[in-house]
Image (tube, rainbow, N blue to C red; front, side):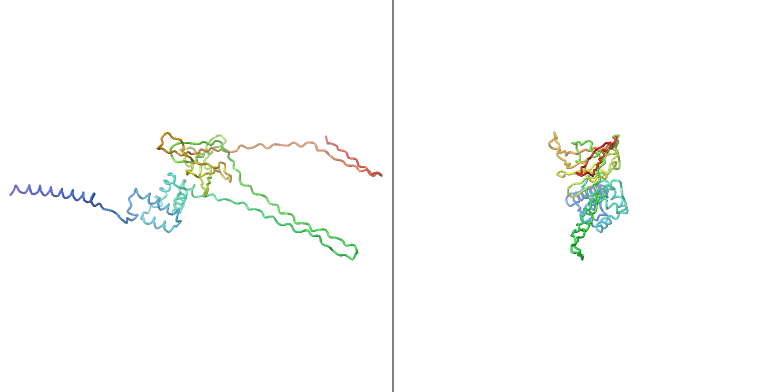
Length: 320
């Protein structure tokens, strides 16, 4: 009887191992567990940034803050405001479409978190239209007859017409910068408009607004947000098939028009590289104002002599 106990224990262990392995194979490969209707609060950490980006994209198209509040509250995370700001900065660095970046920046600002990268997308240029003056019609100057007891009628002088109002035209602000160089760049990465703002000594100038306008929209970026590229550097991602105009500072007139990206020649047919444009601007040097020295002006003297033939003599003298 003592010999049967080890054999029974061995058989039990073998059967348990076979059952455990069979159960794992059935659970992992034959009929794995499928999760459905998962709550946002049950998402894993690596999937939450994608969820927050989808919430920002939905706000760009729906513009419904009530839905945004509900979707963010579904995460049940007290630090969702800070997490959304970090995701917004990361999305801006990835170069997503400007409409989504503006919506996410507005959301983060409304949640109480604002960063330097968001400031560029929190302001949108507004076109200003100068009023067109409407001239006032001149009153009709019709002579009026005033009868008098005298048999000869007398005519009153015509009414004095009201002078036209004077208008001072408001000219669009001119740019104080001048395009120095325009270079086409072919290198891997997203196609961009890269701007360098320099002073008179060719040193980078941070904090200068650069406006980019295109059909159906406009956007803005500021130099100096990427110090690793230089204090006067700023860039903007562009899309194929769209023409872009570039203005600098407070100028309402674009300095560069019709910038388009196009495919660069490449030795590798499988690699597609789109061209970028690098623009360098510097202040316009001051123009000296010419001075005019007044010279002697001629004086005309007219003398009339009361003679029977009424002769008139004229002489011209110049002052020394």
